[in-house]
Length: 418
Ligand code: PA5
Image (cartoon, rainbow, N blue to C red; front, side, top):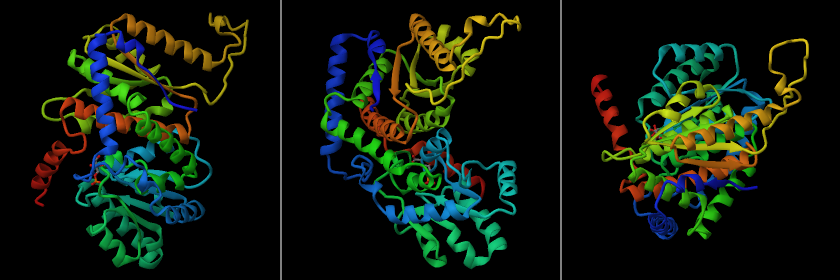
């Protein structure tokens, strides 16, 4: 088991001396992550200490949700829902409630459609909001509370609501006043770094997924980053992408031939976009899912402006087997596929794309895991969070704040008369 980061084909685009120097700077920053005192309260994710916080309550509530709920609504936006969603959407969720998401849009159509699905069902919700001022989750909590109060009454509704917020926040007070379960969103963990806190753990447990394996993955990657700070996937990746950036490669596309990674790539976009895009700097993170997007973005990747880095994410184990059976009388000219498994066909497409794009002048990076599973998600989340922390600092930005996001909120609040 283990995440493999192959950076060799991207390193070919770089000067060896510069690369050595960048790796050594990245390694020092990685070591500093674990040796620096957390004065700004932003490094709470690095030790994984918040992953055991309230784990018993989380398990108990998850079991209740799985037993009693037909629909479980996760209310949150950005870092407050992306990590859990990526795991849940990628893995086969065992029997249990239908999981839905709110708090991430202001579209009345989507809100209405979600409420319609909830009609006549046993509904549980988890409202995740670090700063309980964000309009999207806050307003949806209002709507859901009213909806639930009408259906269940105050008492029955109380057990159906979990809130995940910071200690001392208005959200915690509301939980106390109404008897909702309160889970802590640790202050020293930013939303996009919160995959291993109650923010990610309750939804993953409520989906019936293996929380232990997920945390074991995190722990393996944490140990690797902390103990092998000189050379681990996070350090190598951060160094290479920063050097490429200095050479003018300012767009990075995370691609996968596995559509199950679609929401993971969204999480990655959020992590790097919000962490690095500041001070008029930053690699623009984007994502494409192949083969679908090979027929659109694939053209640009092959032959458009040469400012692109392509980061492939794949799993060795395909997770299923579908073999093309021979049908000599069909005359469709696809007989060359006879007896081939789609696992092989998909892999051939991936290798062909990798080679073609390299030839076209795109530095290609590959992250590969054995299997799409809870453990590998734990590893990937941790490696990318550590990489982002190092990479942002190499670039000279603070990878833990998001002033730009606050700007849109200020102007929206103004428009709405707050
Ligand atoms: O990573 C971040 O800090 C952000 O993406 C937040 O998670 C997002 O803005 C949601 O914030 P909040 O939970 O405070 O509403």
